[in-house]
Image 1 (tube, chains in turn purple, brown):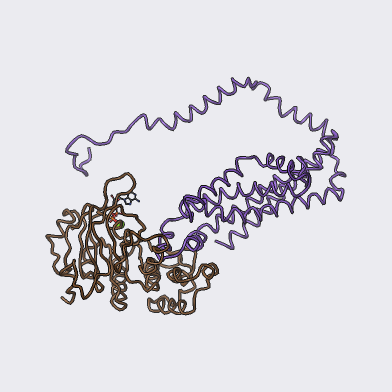
Image 2: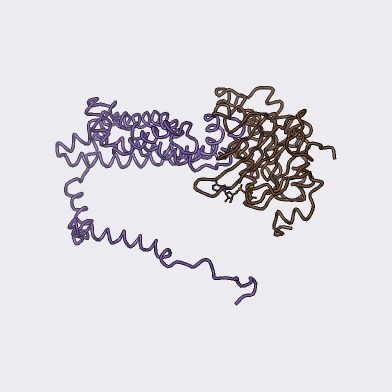
Length: 277
Length: 265
Ligand SMILES: Nc1ncnc2c1ncn2[C@@H]1O[C@H](COP(=O)(O)OP(=O)(O)OP(=O)(O)O)[C@@H](O)[C@H]1O
Ligand SMILES: [Mg+2]
């Protein structure tokens, strides 16, 4: 026994609890049990999995090969690629113009009005998120008809939900001390937001903004499938005609373009983060 | 002693009404026990009140009730005769403009320049639109430059606040409070993050500015030696109550031992 500390006069007031120690492991175990039960309940036959890759190769080589590369070099397809870029860009910019004030209203630490604006902004962001972006597209095509406009609107709603939530979380994670210091000078709610919050979230928000464009662009490549314009419209047409070689070419082009978009956004992000850090 | 007001802490002679008067202040944080259990005292215009007490005694809570960063559950906080606890949010903001605050962790905006940090002290007097573009008034900017110059920070004006040393940051924090032209300074452990030499410099800076501009000071401070050196009056808190309240010259070892339960000294 070490004599560095004196013995306690009474009983030790703390005892380690095995129950608490086991808790995290029990949670993981429960999750795994649930997976096993689900597989059983859904009657999922895992024995069919091993052949998956081989069969995928068969299907690709027999049905889709060779891709009809002529099709994706047609000027109207290239124009659709450009339109898809524009749609995603417009939707991201407009979406963020709306998401920024919403994020201010929806952050519990800085909301200028806790009883009205706070729940309202939370509701709008959650509402945008609770509907999948493709469902938004279908709904809005239903209302506005075919074309670029419904796609842009649907992507804007998607962007509001997506970036709004991330913006809000960044604001809620700022250091409260700086907020208190600015509040203590008699600044109003907007001044507190601009002076205490924005400098702290500048870097995070820049990253979120570029990531949002990335995600919105990826979604924009397929909204056309539901009648909302852009590259996806060509995909739908080829699928309906069961022209597998064209489908293959379009899918390839989407993968390639999303990959390029990812490279661009990574580069811009790098540049921007260095500029605002 | 030159400070006649401090020997009779409360009430103070009618000729010189107290700047701050705290009556039966009680605070409990959500669903907790009372942290302040009925605090009363008054602060005159020429006083530097040092509040001492062991950790958890309620010093920070007390000081933060004055500008309502913490909402008390009961009592009155009269600042120049107005009850801070009865103000609506607009009036509260207007009163906060007249109360400067200095923090233990400085609480500067790290990613903003030193001079902009000082100028945030004028936000309450700057229109929202102007402040959005950081278009502070010319006289405010001049004053900020003069304050920074006086505190030896002239060559750091354009630097980002996170590039300064601890002592320099606290000077910026003090300049931010002073540029408000406050009628009261609230100071919460201004030296706890600083080394002993810088600590005394910072305390001297606060005291000298307070004297020069006749600003009363309410200052939490762990270090009893600093409290006795810079305070004109010492209030000892223990367990959310005022244990003693006396001019600094009258505080002796026995009282100190009592308040710190002989742990600290
Ligand atoms: N935000 C809070 N929520 C709940 N309890 C709090 C909160 N802030 C402080 N307390 C409690 O109130 C009591 C007084 O805290 P306070 O910070 O005022 O003490 P202090 O005298 O300033 O201590 P220190 O010298 O360590 O700064 C403590 O028991 C603390 O646990
Ligand atoms: Mg404290």
